[in-house]
Image (cartoon, rainbow over all chains, first blue to last red; front, top):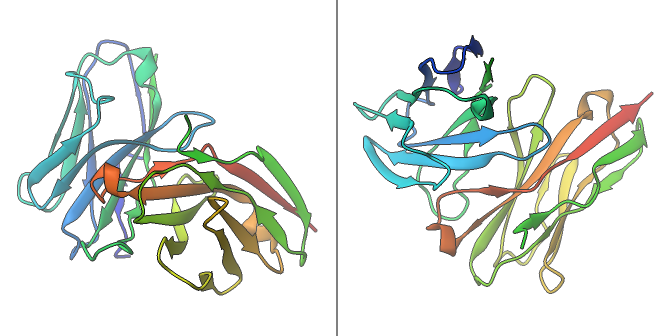
Length: 115
Length: 116
């Protein structure tokens, strides 16, 4: 399977703990995106990378959130001091820059529950 | 104001019938792209179809077609010959120049249920 993969698929944590999610994009894709999706809503953009450079961050991405893509391949999203409001599905997508029809392909997501 | 509006929280259709899922958008850009994604209960967002703002023809991909009415700022998804496996959430999304030609803005989605 050469699609986008995300690990773990599910995470339950206690408030105040740190969590880290991993995303492995499609191998030839140079762009990687993180989105957050809460119940009953569409995904909301958090941040994106082109190769290893983080080019854009949403104001949704508070100081407790940090994302990296150290070698331009996989990416990690870390949430420090989790809060109950962080409970959501975290989706990763990747794409190959190719103009307007650039299509983002999504992974299966990581469901986070903060107790 | 909502950038993407999907007014149908849920839709029901019988197997083998066609269904239209509504999407209206709001942008001041001349250049933008519109996408539809399907999200089954497993959670993965599956790309279905794309329409560019300068495309003169409506996009089609197999059983999916996009009814693009630029003046009305609508981009409705038409699914012909519905199948049971089409039951899922469907999201309309837009990429516009104001977002730097990169990020997608999604609507709230429409839940489609296909009955036998």
